[in-house]
Length: 273
Ligand code: C2E
Ligand code: MG
Ligand code: MG
Ligand code: MG
Image 1 (tube, rainbow, N blue to C red):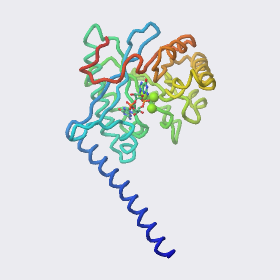
Image 2: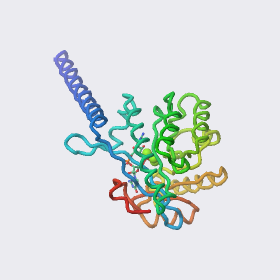
Image 3: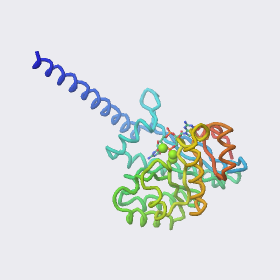
């Protein structure tokens, strides 16, 4: 009967929804446990210049649960942003990255390396974010020119003036900014003109499709031309093959990051310098 079918459907959906809610609650618990019990790690992926020299790294977070199982940031960053846990997690990233940068800066062979961290919109817009960055720089006594903050376009949600002001305050400390995942957002061009970025990162989607798809290749070329006229450096993300690297070199790309050169690794396995 129709009425029973309806009831079954409702039960089916409510069970499915409960499963989703339970999975999210479990993940949130794991994040809280990782915060309390030292369950986060930073992995470091090299960035290279046109001569193949390692000039720095991007720090990428990993979470390990109580069983030692790794949870990827793609799986937990969105929930961390929703719950606000991204704020303490992001503070841990800033601390850990600054400590590592300090270690590099006091060793002559690694003193010139830069280190990029990813900062979520929600973290960036915390009222005391500028102060936190300034305090971390001072506490770890790093030369701030080695620190770079990667933001995505989502950082401009809301008021662009506030974002520009905040970026200027942080730039005044000596820290640089990169626009991550460039080409995947909506308003790239109008924002790009107003926000004081130093660097663009071409999203790996375009790099991946560059050879087989002429529109991706055209987009890569357009981004490189645009960045030259705006005096921005460009990092190509997700470079996996020698052919992609070759093509990017030909097009004038200056910096490279991807599995071709190195996967993200824990600091014990970091060999470049
Ligand atoms: P992202 O910042 O765009 O980082 C680049 C992602 O591409 C990383 O994934 C990296 O491991 C991956 N990747 C690098 N080279 C290659 C390649 O050649 N091929 C392929 N297929 N992938 C490559 P990961 O580490 O899983 O991080 C995913 C995203 O999570 C990051 O994207 C970033 O948006 C976010 N994330 C990572 N760490 C943090 C963090 O500390 N804070 C915040 N707020 N977000 C983070
Ligand atoms: Mg990034
Ligand atoms: Mg990216
Ligand atoms: Mg990304």
